[in-house]
Image 1 (spheres, helix red, strand yellow):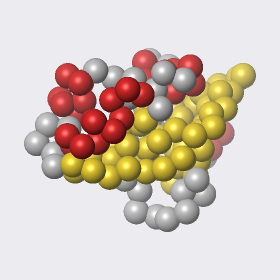
Image 2 (cartoon, one colour; image 1 turned 90 degrees about the horizontal axis):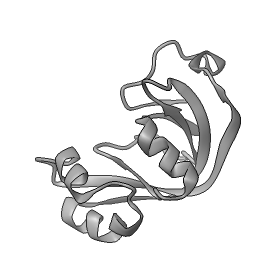
Image 3 (cartoon, helix red, strand yellow; image 1 turned 30 degrees about the horizontal axis):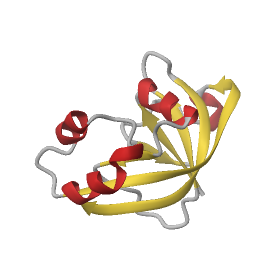
Length: 122
């Protein structure tokens, strides 16, 4: 099964150039068996630009997760701390094999009319 994640373009492109090996989330999917993430680059791009295999999903307290992921986070510590402010637990989706589409796709091609705030099951 796959999920489509909305990701800011600056971070989405880092996933495909290999400088961001973790996608951070405040909450994670409830369904089991999610193997792939379809990447929707949010505004101003507003297109599905590729997908990646899920290597692992980490769940730790925020300080520990940063220690584990910082060298391949693709973000600054300041951004991380701001994103997880007032949170005790944090999630990181470890990026596996990536596939960037040669031609970006629209949400309509996935029968989606509005971009998800966080993610949607496919």
